[in-house]
Length: 229
Length: 292
Image (cartoon, rainbow over all chains, first blue to last red):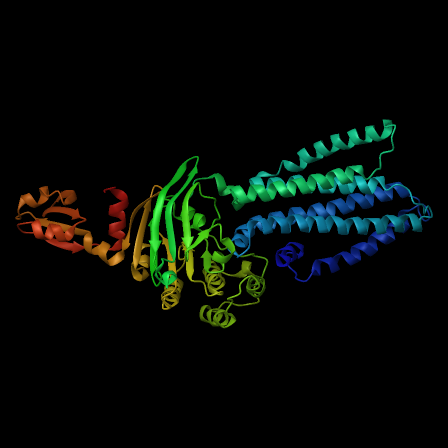
């Protein structure tokens, strides 16, 4: 199982988390940018905008990683290859979902550090509710949940519309939760959207395992529904 | 003791429906120590059958047993004993052969590194080149090395020689012959290159339009089916024999075919002679004319 998760985590060209080392210069550039563009030096961006920028960057990195991995797997018949190994199909699903959960958790920590750094460097250090971070992370989890479920249901070639659909559903749900928070007489913690997304992620995970156990993993290049040879 | 007598692979009642294609009641057995050529035209159902055996496509009905174990119920144990090469190499183009082998070896308790080294040398496959830099022939050879690295009992090869040059094809066929020297092993080998099947197969299974047409010993099949040539001067009664089919008048007389040569030999009178068919001729005959 660990081998399958490790395969998911590793970059396409390097082994042993080599790609993570590649993010170090990016981290330094981001930290310098926070300082240079922040209120203390140039004042081009305020603390809130920098936080939003950081969160968007984090979401893009994780979604980019997910998208790239699914695309490469499809192009190289890797789901088929994994099924020829002595592993259960459910383990292949578990590895994909665990990988994204791990990346989301890692990104949560990284963003937490950078947002704290932003507040500290720009002199507004305070323990405010981390609404934006929760919102972006919940979006990330929701999109990953929907993408992975449909990936295991339809195959990579048939999930191009998933991003747009997820964006619309999540946007609507987020506005609804926002309204509830605004008008609720009882206090609603901003982490609610994250918790809901997390629950949906686990539901999607369970459904994907069930689907794969019954129907199998779709053929790569969407040839599952064409006539066989 | 009972296990040693059991076929390596038993497929019975296998069916799978697609909107425009159906695999219907596919059944055959592969005994240990044999190579079975799995013949069929494009779209006949060869790859679907192979994938269903590996549970890469979910069957609608039927039973598949490998070494007596049920698929997919005992999927993990079965796949430890099976090597599969698909119609497209299932190798990650961004990885090197070294990395591919290092990844796969952890999944198999029977991994034989000495055999891997031997096959890498035999096929002259570089370890450090990315798979994307290998030629098609090398990719097929690399896939075979990977499929055989854990000393499987059963090799399932879906069109492994298609698109390869004759030298590489011969190397692959020799490797397969060598593989079944150990009589506890077997190979199911799909192809539409009938000459390859004729060279190495002990058994032949023909699939057409999703149905198994014939599954038997190659030699007895080639003995049973004969081309019967009746010269113009010969007895015309022979042409009317119910044992002959596809009878046609030719410049010098008549040509027909029989699938019960021994019986025909005993019953036919007059001037005639028989010709042994090549597997290719037989394949064209069988898939061109569907007879009982």
